[in-house]
Every structure is written in C-alpha cells, then in structure tokens.
Image 1 (cartoon, one colour):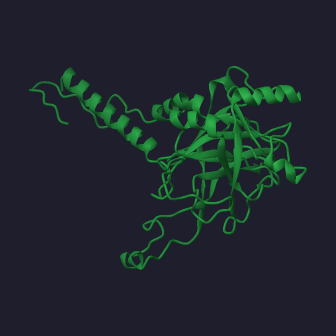
Image 2 (cartoon, rainbow, N blue to C red; image 1 turned 135 degrees about the vertical axis):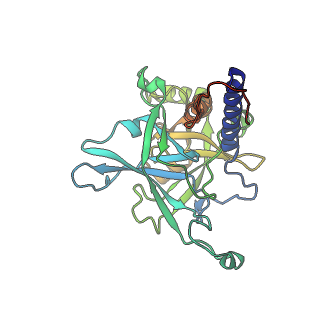
Image 3 (cartoon, rainbow, N blue to C red; image 1 turned 90 degrees about the horizontal axis):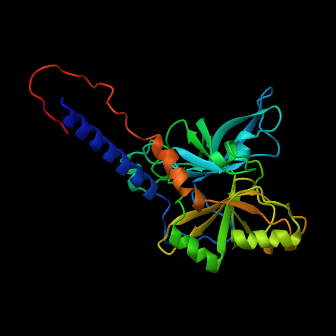
Length: 321
C-alpha cells in the first residue's frame, strides 16, 4: 500500500468520524409540540436530566443532602459543574451517574412485534452508569477560577434510542433570550432522589438576566464575586447545583442555556418569583461551546492506522475504500 493510499484511507476515516460527530450533536431533543406547563412533569418528558451520587467510603451509603445534577449532551457525555464533580464532601467519593427517568426502547425491554403493534409500552426504569473520565475546563484546573464546567465521560454510550441528549445553545436563540428573557428550569422534586421508581421531575418558568445585568445587580446588592467567568442569573431561589435552565426555540429544539452553580435557599414564598439579593447563578453554556465540541470529538478521532493494518512488501498497490 503506497503513501497515497494511506492518505486516502486516513482522510476517508477522518471524514466519516467527523460526519458521525456532527450527526451526534444534531440528533438532540427536538419536539415542537411538547410544551408542558409549570409543575410536576409526566414520565419521559425530559429524560436527559440525571444526577450524581456521593457515596460514603466506609458505609457505601449516599450523601443525605447532596446530589449534583448533570445533563446529557451527547450519548456518552454529561455536563456538570467542576466544583461538584471534583471537590467532594469529606469521606465521600463520586458514585454512578443516575438517570431516574430512563426510557427504554422496545428491543431493550424485550417487547415482541405483536406487543409493539398493540402499543404496549416499556415499564418505568432508571439506569446507573459508571463514569470513565472527568475533564474540567482549563480555567478551573489551571487558572484558579472558582467554578466552571466539567465534562463527564460515561463508561459506554446510552443504548436506548429514546435517550436523546439536550441540544447545545445556538447563537440565534442566545440573542433572542437577551430580549425575551423567559427560560425554564427542570429538576427533580427531591433534593436527593432515592426512590427512583416513583421520583418525579418538575418545571419552573424563570426570568433570565445577562452577565452584565447580573453583575450590576450583585454589585448594587453588595453580594460579592460570582466565582464564575461566564455567569448568568435568574429570578427565584433554592436552585440546586447542576440544575439546568433551558429554552424551547421556534424550531422545536430544547437548548441548554445554563447550568446552576448555586443560589440562596427559599426562606419566603415571595422569593420564588423575583430577583433576590443572592440570585441563583448559572454557568453560561454558549461561551464553552468550542471547548465542549473539541473535547468530545477529540475522543472520537480515528487512529492513523486500523488495528489490523499490515504493510505488504512488493507487488502492485491497490486502494480499497
């Protein structure tokens, strides 16, 4: 095999891998007709929301009050906050990634063709997925920023065809949100989900404020530094770490706008509808888009040669696609 054949082989493999990754990112949660009201959500509404368990190193029991949320952005990757993934409570280790509203496909739950024709659905399920690697943003690991994003690679991709990741934010939707400011947050009802068979999720509409507006408000309120490079904030209170704020764009796609870095608890009911002094802070996703795509695609790049590649001496060379 000559050098031109090697170049063609590598180029073809690279292009296929690149197209595959583009397809992965474009295949995201898109449903124009899905417009649930605020309150408790039905099953399989937003299956891309998960959480992480902190497990005690001695007893093996989960932490009683902390379970950071994570969001599925690609079949094998979730995004969360770097602080929650890397700065663990004393005597605790990071457990599995759990999706409490895992939607199995027909093959996964063993439905027959006759049952599918009769519109039989798979029973409710959840999945615990070990993680393989955690990659924090360099601003957190190298430049001392208080909090940032972290990508967590799962042990294997999600098998079910119905476990569709959330869409990454687009520039058009980002500019639209600067004017309309209406977003909504999705989270589990319980602070630490325990009974996965009965656990519910909820939706809450919030008003979003840009980095400039958020910083101006915090300076006026003397609330101190945010500890986040690209920050946005919202109305409300009691937001848990990692909880996402999302938007439903005009084309039907659900886009991830921000990931919660923290906020003050709700001491009064009236705090839930207005911008309070210690407003909830979110890490703005859009400025990290290039880094997210680079990290994920870097793990998908093909090797220069296939595992069964062999050099053959002598004879004419042929290229095989």
